[in-house]
Length: 316
Image (cartoon, rainbow, N blue to C red; front, side, top):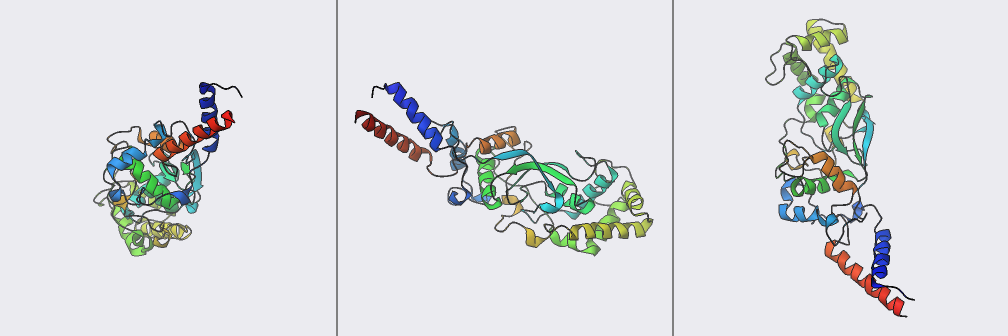
């Protein structure tokens, strides 16, 4: 067989490319390389891991690919949380804004979260819009990025991207928990504070801070007045939440780290790698993160062995 060195290398490239056209395998994610908690991620190692897909050892291949559907859509009732930290005041303010048609980005319930959602329906972010939608209308569609990878492993990969690609060293703080959302007294107290414009952080409803707006929305939506409207709105929110399986502490993703150790894919906090969301999608969908074996140098060695094997076959 007459074949040039250049042709041999091209054949090798094609063979290797075919062999590596595969999605990343979540079962093959090494916990020691990809810690679950952001605080346990080594910045230098993370920076190397998120570049392995572009170097001479792994460039242009489709191994380690984690597909991302940018048009993901779910009913609020289908989603589950990956964190327990949520603020009842913020969620109620959002929900009232949704009922008023003034919620940021969507007007009504649901809308675009800009969040990544795992293959087992765990939200990586956007929890307040989700829980507010569950309170206002659990059937409303919530949009985000559907990632074909299970939640536990996805958190670890996104935390490596958070620190290695985006330069975010610390996660967001979190307050509150699901117990507030299952406590009618806490719900009435929060809605009363909003209705009386005396909530310490939130005025009016999401999208308009007009005084008296929160009570106006409650009265319009319940057909009641004053305290009766507050009580009726609390009952409506509690009933809607009860219909959402994910709206409880028991539904939180097993093994999820605390909020401060969760991924942060946010331009406001990223120190590099902007735009954060677009570059995270690219890193996942193009296989830039060195998720599975063979890892960088191992791939180079494998390619060299394949090259030698082809030479021997040609000689024969």
